[in-house]
Image 1 (cartoon, rainbow, N blue to C red):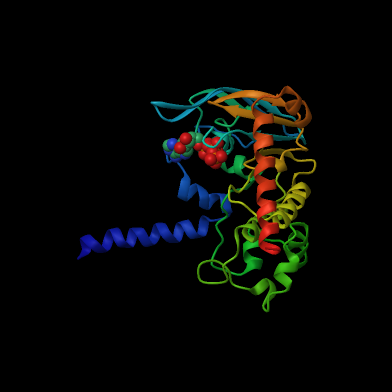
Image 2: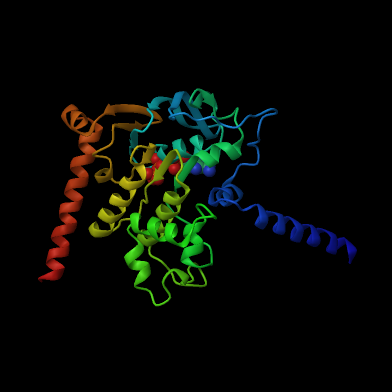
Length: 306
Ligand code: ATP
């Protein structure tokens, strides 16, 4: 019996340890998603930030040896600017955000933040500097207030409410009978994708990171929700060094630079208008998306007035 007991006890211990060390939502993603091979280097220092400027220098990456995902990607996100990455599904867009967050290490090349290679700094300091709004937000089985306050555990109730307001989710929460005390998650109220994402944005507003990664939800949202989320994201991204992984082109129109990723390389880059004028892949994607949304609107109109 002891033989069974000991490992079980060990599991209990590890579980308690994990719970106690869950200081940040990203820590949880780390547990779910993290590649255990990623470790701090001996003597890794805390990331020092002044700006900050992000650089990808000739980055190559593959998950599996026989399928290269990034083949020499270089770009810079200047301090306080927003760079958007677009491209066909599977092109490696989200992979770029995972590499910056150091869920994985590059195969060759390097990624720096203010000249410091992300592999040379502690993961803790790296993740403290980056706020990540992921595609699919995982909420804790706890109150909405708890889920928002997770961004900064010492935030006051007033600050939590203010973050919810900026994230355009306050009206929704305040209309619930139990307001901020409403239990959410699997055992509580189920939130829609758009509501969950706005809770994640509120959390990130509280965290107030210097670098922001927005990995847009792939799932279709209705136009009103999309607009609300867009305006919430604009609030968080203002004056922050921001990398947007865009699955819908409507969100990238105002980006300082757009990178079009194709076959693991940056095929086109520039501002929205320049890319349209180039008449390349971006222009094609744009006109296809316009057609799709027009078709959708026509369909919605026929449903309303058959
Ligand atoms: P989408 O727009 O559809 O989200 P994306 O451009 O963001 O696509 P990525 O998520 O970066 O694409 O994935 C790039 C490629 O890497 C895909 O072909 C995917 O199947 C593969 N891939 C992603 N994660 C892994 C993984 N953990 N192991 C192996 N292959 C992976």
